[in-house]
Length: 243
Image (cartoon, rainbow, N blue to C red; front, side, top):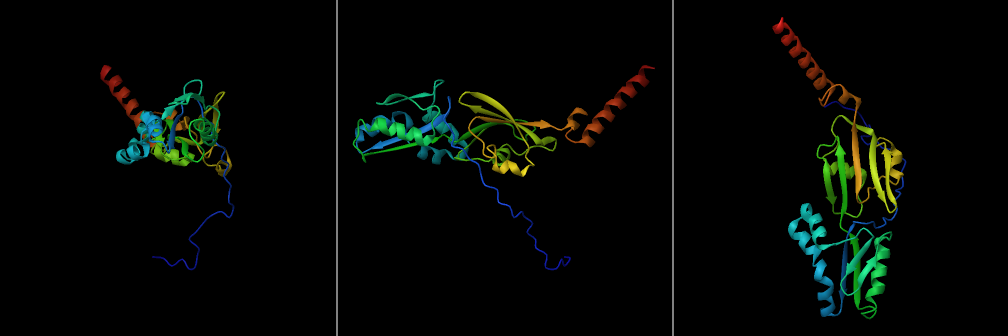
């Protein structure tokens, strides 16, 4: 191998970009795990009627099927943002963080159980999102993590193909009062400090094709040129045959 001397193989930026991560607010149709444990076996049996042991089921099914476990055993917020819990009844969680939802449920549980004799856990059933357009594996995805970057989401969808427009990706994000469309440049380092670096549940990511797609249906310019040339040759042969 060629001797390159004492050159430093590490090429990096000396700028460290801080994250911007806002607490997620629960929205209608979100799936949450609500786990309530008390010192009373009778109450534990009542509270576990729906939830069961999600962690145990996830271990048996593996990460790929974990999202389905949350769907079957978690609580889905209704259109009005309400869930119905055993003994407690209906409770509205929409617009709250998971920490605020936990505190609200603890207040309700404290009506039946003494202080320090119960435990409440509230967490999202993974990050669910969709990918459309120029992805190698588009579709619906679930990542069983609390935080997922947009690059991790793209990797989950098999990365973008060679004709994807990476400097203008469309992200449709849901908010408590509606949905909003955002345009994202994956090549811009400022993305790392924006609110779009971490995706949120129910985000939809659409990768637009480059202009080369307009030339033909090939994945590259050479493939498209070959397709156009083959088409013109076929028309020429037909024209010659007819004359």
